[in-house]
Length: 269
Image 1 (tube, rainbow, N blue to C red):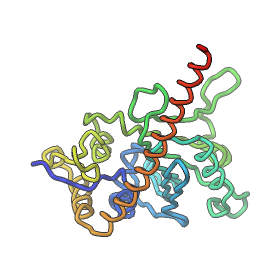
Image 2: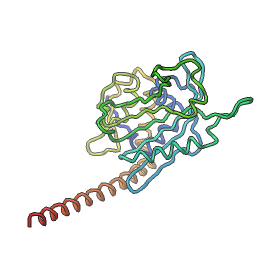
Image 3: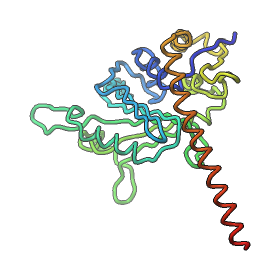
Image 4: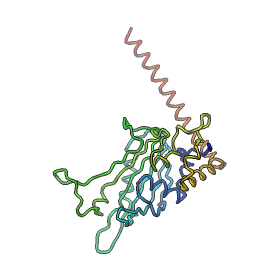
Protein backbone atom coordinates (compact mmCIF):
# COMPACT_ATOMS: atom_id res chain seq x y z
CA UNK A 1 0.00 0.00 0.00
CA UNK A 2 1.31 3.44 -0.94
CA UNK A 3 1.31 5.87 1.97
CA UNK A 4 1.89 9.64 1.92
CA UNK A 5 4.25 11.02 4.56
CA UNK A 6 5.89 14.36 5.29
CA UNK A 7 9.10 14.99 3.36
CA UNK A 8 12.04 14.90 5.85
CA UNK A 9 14.20 17.04 3.56
CA UNK A 10 12.41 19.98 5.19
CA UNK A 11 14.18 21.30 8.29
CA UNK A 12 10.99 21.36 10.33
CA UNK A 13 10.17 17.72 9.54
CA UNK A 14 13.76 16.60 10.00
CA UNK A 15 13.82 18.22 13.44
CA UNK A 16 10.52 16.56 14.35
CA UNK A 17 11.91 13.22 13.20
CA UNK A 18 15.30 13.33 14.91
CA UNK A 19 14.11 14.69 18.26
CA UNK A 20 12.56 11.27 18.85
CA UNK A 21 15.18 9.21 20.72
CA UNK A 22 14.26 5.88 19.12
CA UNK A 23 14.40 7.31 15.61
CA UNK A 24 17.69 9.07 16.32
CA UNK A 25 19.17 5.73 17.45
CA UNK A 26 17.83 3.99 14.35
CA UNK A 27 19.20 6.56 11.90
CA UNK A 28 22.58 6.95 13.60
CA UNK A 29 23.03 3.19 14.01
CA UNK A 30 22.45 2.71 10.30
CA UNK A 31 24.90 5.49 9.40
CA UNK A 32 27.63 4.36 11.81
CA UNK A 33 27.06 0.66 11.04
CA UNK A 34 27.22 0.05 14.77
CA UNK A 35 24.58 -0.17 17.48
CA UNK A 36 23.85 3.17 19.12
CA UNK A 37 22.71 2.11 22.58
CA UNK A 38 21.92 5.56 23.92
CA UNK A 39 21.71 9.00 22.34
CA UNK A 40 21.11 12.46 23.75
CA UNK A 41 20.67 15.75 21.95
CA UNK A 42 23.30 18.14 23.23
CA UNK A 43 23.02 21.86 23.89
CA UNK A 44 22.73 24.22 20.90
CA UNK A 45 20.63 21.71 19.02
CA UNK A 46 18.51 22.74 16.05
CA UNK A 47 20.85 25.53 14.98
CA UNK A 48 19.28 26.81 11.79
CA UNK A 49 21.37 29.13 9.69
CA UNK A 50 19.30 30.99 7.13
CA UNK A 51 21.57 33.15 5.08
CA UNK A 52 21.57 34.78 1.70
CA UNK A 53 22.11 31.56 -0.16
CA UNK A 54 21.77 28.62 2.21
CA UNK A 55 19.78 26.90 4.89
CA UNK A 56 21.95 24.78 7.13
CA UNK A 57 20.45 22.67 9.88
CA UNK A 58 22.54 21.14 12.67
CA UNK A 59 21.97 18.78 15.56
CA UNK A 60 24.63 17.68 18.04
CA UNK A 61 24.34 14.23 19.61
CA UNK A 62 26.17 12.50 22.40
CA UNK A 63 25.94 8.78 21.64
CA UNK A 64 27.07 5.62 23.38
CA UNK A 65 28.12 3.27 20.60
CA UNK A 66 28.74 -0.45 21.04
CA UNK A 67 32.17 -1.45 19.74
CA UNK A 68 33.15 -4.75 18.12
CA UNK A 69 34.45 -6.08 21.46
CA UNK A 70 31.13 -5.28 23.17
CA UNK A 71 32.38 -2.22 25.05
CA UNK A 72 30.59 1.13 24.91
CA UNK A 73 32.27 4.25 23.58
CA UNK A 74 30.98 7.79 24.01
CA UNK A 75 31.04 9.61 20.66
CA UNK A 76 30.09 13.16 19.67
CA UNK A 77 28.06 13.20 16.43
CA UNK A 78 27.77 16.45 14.50
CA UNK A 79 24.89 16.05 12.05
CA UNK A 80 24.50 18.81 9.45
CA UNK A 81 21.84 18.94 6.74
CA UNK A 82 21.53 21.40 3.90
CA UNK A 83 19.30 21.73 0.85
CA UNK A 84 21.66 23.76 -1.25
CA UNK A 85 25.33 23.77 -2.15
CA UNK A 86 27.50 25.69 0.26
CA UNK A 87 31.11 26.55 0.90
CA UNK A 88 33.00 23.96 2.93
CA UNK A 89 34.18 26.85 5.11
CA UNK A 90 30.75 26.95 6.76
CA UNK A 91 31.08 23.31 7.80
CA UNK A 92 34.68 23.80 8.95
CA UNK A 93 33.74 26.79 11.08
CA UNK A 94 31.09 24.78 12.88
CA UNK A 95 33.43 21.85 13.44
CA UNK A 96 36.06 24.26 14.77
CA UNK A 97 33.56 25.56 17.29
CA UNK A 98 32.90 22.01 18.49
CA UNK A 99 36.59 21.21 18.81
CA UNK A 100 37.12 24.29 20.97
CA UNK A 101 34.02 23.79 23.11
CA UNK A 102 35.08 22.85 26.69
CA UNK A 103 31.85 20.89 27.09
CA UNK A 104 33.18 18.38 24.56
CA UNK A 105 36.18 17.56 26.74
CA UNK A 106 36.36 14.58 29.08
CA UNK A 107 38.04 15.05 32.46
CA UNK A 108 39.42 12.07 34.32
CA UNK A 109 41.60 11.82 37.40
CA UNK A 110 45.37 11.47 36.95
CA UNK A 111 45.32 12.38 33.25
CA UNK A 112 44.95 15.55 31.15
CA UNK A 113 41.50 16.35 29.67
CA UNK A 114 40.85 14.97 26.20
CA UNK A 115 38.24 15.61 23.54
CA UNK A 116 35.38 13.26 22.75
CA UNK A 117 35.91 11.32 19.50
CA UNK A 118 33.77 12.98 16.84
CA UNK A 119 31.94 11.84 13.73
CA UNK A 120 30.72 14.48 11.27
CA UNK A 121 27.61 13.49 9.28
CA UNK A 122 26.56 15.58 6.27
CA UNK A 123 23.14 14.98 4.70
CA UNK A 124 23.22 16.94 1.48
CA UNK A 125 20.39 17.81 -0.88
CA UNK A 126 22.94 18.15 -3.69
CA UNK A 127 25.80 16.18 -5.25
CA UNK A 128 29.46 16.58 -4.37
CA UNK A 129 31.57 16.94 -7.52
CA UNK A 130 31.65 13.73 -9.56
CA UNK A 131 31.42 11.32 -6.64
CA UNK A 132 28.97 8.65 -7.74
CA UNK A 133 28.23 6.78 -4.50
CA UNK A 134 25.23 7.91 -2.42
CA UNK A 135 27.01 7.47 0.94
CA UNK A 136 30.73 8.17 1.33
CA UNK A 137 32.70 7.14 4.42
CA UNK A 138 35.89 9.12 5.05
CA UNK A 139 37.87 7.34 7.77
CA UNK A 140 41.36 8.12 9.02
CA UNK A 141 43.99 5.40 9.37
CA UNK A 142 47.05 5.95 11.56
CA UNK A 143 50.20 4.94 9.69
CA UNK A 144 53.95 4.93 10.28
CA UNK A 145 56.56 6.53 8.04
CA UNK A 146 56.45 3.57 5.64
CA UNK A 147 52.68 3.82 5.27
CA UNK A 148 51.97 0.75 7.36
CA UNK A 149 48.82 0.96 9.47
CA UNK A 150 49.48 1.27 13.21
CA UNK A 151 47.16 -0.65 15.53
CA UNK A 152 49.19 -1.09 18.74
CA UNK A 153 48.05 1.30 21.45
CA UNK A 154 45.01 2.45 19.50
CA UNK A 155 42.42 3.81 19.88
CA UNK A 156 44.05 6.51 21.96
CA UNK A 157 42.25 9.55 23.48
CA UNK A 158 44.96 11.97 22.32
CA UNK A 159 44.70 10.82 18.70
CA UNK A 160 40.90 10.68 18.76
CA UNK A 161 40.79 14.23 20.15
CA UNK A 162 42.54 15.67 17.11
CA UNK A 163 40.98 13.88 14.15
CA UNK A 164 37.46 12.88 13.15
CA UNK A 165 35.67 10.65 10.69
CA UNK A 166 33.03 11.83 8.23
CA UNK A 167 29.95 10.39 6.55
CA UNK A 168 28.61 12.21 3.50
CA UNK A 169 25.11 11.38 2.21
CA UNK A 170 24.17 12.61 -1.27
CA UNK A 171 20.37 12.51 -1.36
CA UNK A 172 20.10 12.93 -5.18
CA UNK A 173 21.94 9.61 -5.64
CA UNK A 174 19.64 7.45 -3.50
CA UNK A 175 17.56 6.47 -6.57
CA UNK A 176 15.08 4.26 -4.74
CA UNK A 177 17.43 1.29 -4.33
CA UNK A 178 17.21 -0.67 -1.07
CA UNK A 179 20.16 -3.06 -0.82
CA UNK A 180 21.07 -2.82 2.85
CA UNK A 181 19.97 -1.45 6.22
CA UNK A 182 21.22 2.07 5.53
CA UNK A 183 19.47 2.20 2.14
CA UNK A 184 16.20 1.30 3.85
CA UNK A 185 16.58 4.01 6.51
CA UNK A 186 17.60 6.67 3.98
CA UNK A 187 14.80 5.72 1.59
CA UNK A 188 12.45 8.11 3.40
CA UNK A 189 14.73 10.95 2.21
CA UNK A 190 14.69 9.82 -1.43
CA UNK A 191 13.34 12.76 -3.42
CA UNK A 192 12.51 10.49 -6.35
CA UNK A 193 9.46 9.51 -4.28
CA UNK A 194 8.10 13.01 -3.66
CA UNK A 195 4.64 13.78 -4.94
CA UNK A 196 4.53 15.24 -8.42
CA UNK A 197 2.46 18.28 -7.47
CA UNK A 198 3.45 18.65 -3.82
CA UNK A 199 7.08 18.25 -2.79
CA UNK A 200 6.10 18.49 0.87
CA UNK A 201 4.93 14.87 0.70
CA UNK A 202 6.72 11.64 -0.14
CA UNK A 203 4.98 8.49 -1.38
CA UNK A 204 6.35 5.24 0.04
CA UNK A 205 5.37 1.61 -0.39
CA UNK A 206 4.49 0.28 3.05
CA UNK A 207 5.28 -3.27 1.89
CA UNK A 208 9.01 -2.45 1.87
CA UNK A 209 8.96 -1.92 5.64
CA UNK A 210 6.46 -4.45 6.99
CA UNK A 211 9.12 -6.65 8.60
CA UNK A 212 10.92 -3.72 10.24
CA UNK A 213 9.44 -2.34 13.47
CA UNK A 214 11.86 0.59 13.61
CA UNK A 215 11.00 1.69 10.07
CA UNK A 216 7.29 1.32 10.78
CA UNK A 217 7.83 3.64 13.75
CA UNK A 218 9.59 6.19 11.51
CA UNK A 219 6.80 6.03 8.93
CA UNK A 220 4.16 6.53 11.60
CA UNK A 221 5.91 9.66 12.87
CA UNK A 222 6.18 11.02 9.32
CA UNK A 223 2.47 10.33 8.74
CA UNK A 224 1.68 12.30 11.89
CA UNK A 225 3.94 15.11 10.69
CA UNK A 226 2.10 15.25 7.35
CA UNK A 227 -1.16 16.26 9.06
CA UNK A 228 0.33 18.54 11.71
CA UNK A 229 -0.88 22.09 11.00
CA UNK A 230 2.18 23.80 12.49
CA UNK A 231 4.62 21.61 10.58
CA UNK A 232 2.76 22.21 7.34
CA UNK A 233 2.97 25.95 7.98
CA UNK A 234 6.70 25.65 8.70
CA UNK A 235 7.17 23.80 5.41
CA UNK A 236 5.27 26.56 3.60
CA UNK A 237 7.68 29.11 5.08
CA UNK A 238 10.66 27.07 3.88
CA UNK A 239 9.11 26.83 0.40
CA UNK A 240 8.67 30.59 0.29
CA UNK A 241 12.26 31.12 1.39
CA UNK A 242 13.72 28.84 -1.26
CA UNK A 243 11.36 30.14 -3.93
CA UNK A 244 12.72 33.61 -3.25
CA UNK A 245 16.25 32.26 -3.69
CA UNK A 246 15.30 30.54 -6.96
CA UNK A 247 13.66 33.73 -8.26
CA UNK A 248 16.74 35.74 -7.36
CA UNK A 249 19.09 33.24 -9.00
CA UNK A 250 16.91 33.18 -12.14
CA UNK A 251 17.02 36.97 -12.33
CA UNK A 252 20.81 36.94 -11.93
CA UNK A 253 21.23 34.32 -14.65
CA UNK A 254 18.99 36.33 -16.99
CA UNK A 255 20.97 39.50 -16.30
CA UNK A 256 24.30 37.76 -16.86
CA UNK A 257 23.02 36.33 -20.14
CA UNK A 258 21.97 39.78 -21.34
CA UNK A 259 25.35 41.25 -20.38
CA UNK A 260 27.16 38.47 -22.21
CA UNK A 261 25.06 39.00 -25.35
CA UNK A 262 25.76 42.76 -25.29
CA UNK A 263 29.49 42.14 -24.83
CA UNK A 264 29.47 39.80 -27.84
CA UNK A 265 27.67 42.40 -29.92
CA UNK A 266 30.26 45.02 -28.96
CA UNK A 267 33.08 42.67 -29.92
CA UNK A 268 31.50 42.01 -33.30
CA UNK A 269 31.21 45.76 -33.96
